Length: 182
Image (cartoon, rainbow, N blue to C red; front, side, top):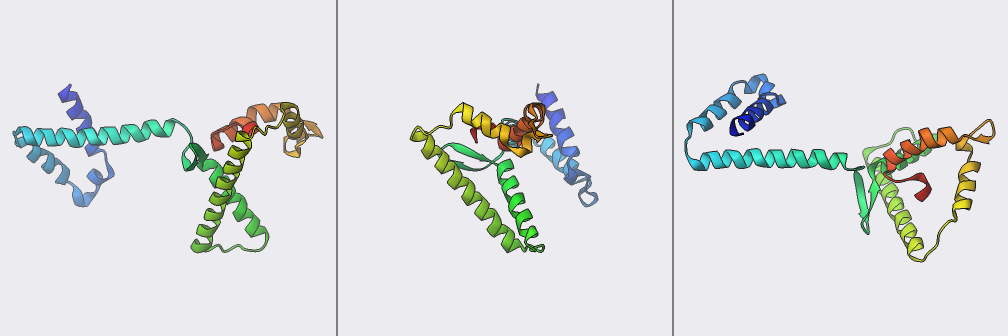
């Protein structure tokens, strides 16, 4: 087990961009050779702790990335997905460009991002308050609104295939929630 872990660690170290940097050639192997020559329990424990911390950190970040959409904020344990935030920023930027504001400074972009985030937080709070008060949109009314939305129509009729097979999965991936619930 220890040999396999050591082999994996050496492969990982030698395949990093730092190990391939010409100015650092030989540094990583020399460092590993010096550590191998030290026979104390302390040095082996230290190396093990370092390896374990890398494994835990990178393993956790990989698992958490697969676990769901990345969040930009949390409002009372309800996340605001990064996809929804990015879409809001993109929409605001497009609106500014329509009004002739084509050169957006970094300060203006930061202000725009803050406004989008504040709006998303406010919308989430309103939705939570409505839910707490028991305010619900009846399913029949929601279905009617979706069917009447021109974005989901083709030739003046509701395109169920597009809605179910294209739009809904895309929305779920971008926002981490169903379109009907947002």
